[in-house]
Length: 126
Image (cartoon, rainbow, N blue to C red):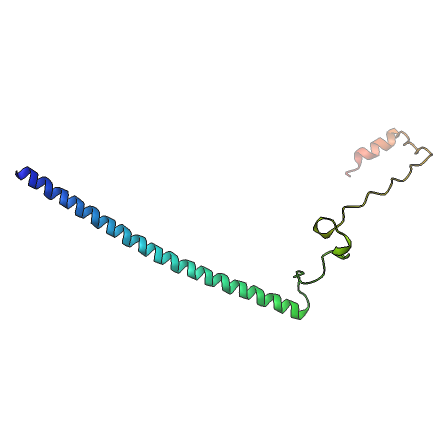
């Protein structure tokens, strides 16, 4: 009978240990969640401050006349986008102009080089 009582006591101890570990794991999980939430809140605040800073810089640029933000201005092209109804507001490229006709006269051919010219080139560092 003592074997059964000992086994039961050991089983109860294991169940308690398992419950304690579960509680500890849940507590650690909650702490991690809280830290993560705090970290993410700080990240969002930092991102909001950054966005606000960028907006202020854009306004300063606009006031001083050197804004590069063209979202509110005319299209980037020198032509109006409405005039060119192609994809993205631009017309497909125009066909290339016809090639210029070649010369009717043949080009002069190079004369053969003399040995003296060959030697001069050999001594030329260029």
